[in-house]
Amino acid sequence: MSTAPEPGTVLVLSASPRAGSRPDWLGDHVTRLLTEAGCRARHLKVRDLPSEALVHAEAGDPELARACAAVDSAEGLVLITPIYRAAYSGLLKLFLDALPRHALAGKTVMPLATGGSAAHVLALDYTLRPVAQTMGARHVVRGHFVHDEELPRLQGRIEPVARTEAAVGAAVSVFHRALLQGAQPTPTVQPWNVGA
Image (tube, rainbow, N blue to C red; front, side, top):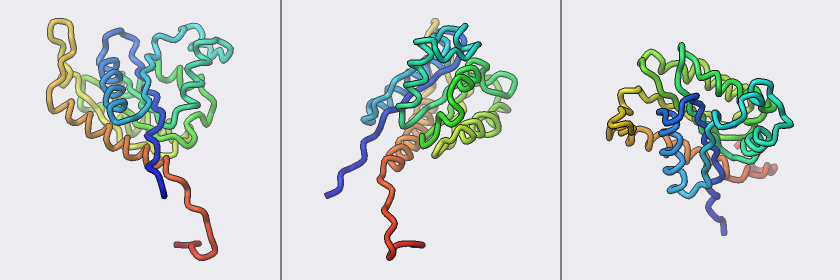
């Protein structure tokens, strides 16, 4: 009797230098959605890591070492970044540079981004996807871009428009399915199923 694969552990990384940012809101929202789907999800805000350790990629720093270990133990990663000048944030770049070269090997990855121009949509495919693939990701699901206008601030709080919550929810569902597929056991090669 086969059992359903476990949903897995997911690390949600948001990489905005500003507290209360749209990427922070997305990180909290995505973590909640994944938890409701049965995943063990955790949200890590990269800006909370020691800046000196990040800039110098100090592997011996305890907080940075814990963050790198969280990446290593996760089966899936959600990378959330603001888009600045058609590229992901420098904060995310610093963190990714602190990881081992193939730190994403075997993992399912979903990039998410926020930005003030629809022209930034392509940054997910042209900047963040190749980095995840180069770092060995097993599967990089299609990214999702959220325009700043879809996450307006009302009296200091981010209040997403309904279609945005639905679109992010759909993207998370695709990621969750890919994560479950990655948890499926690899079929054993037998003489009768080679080339099947």
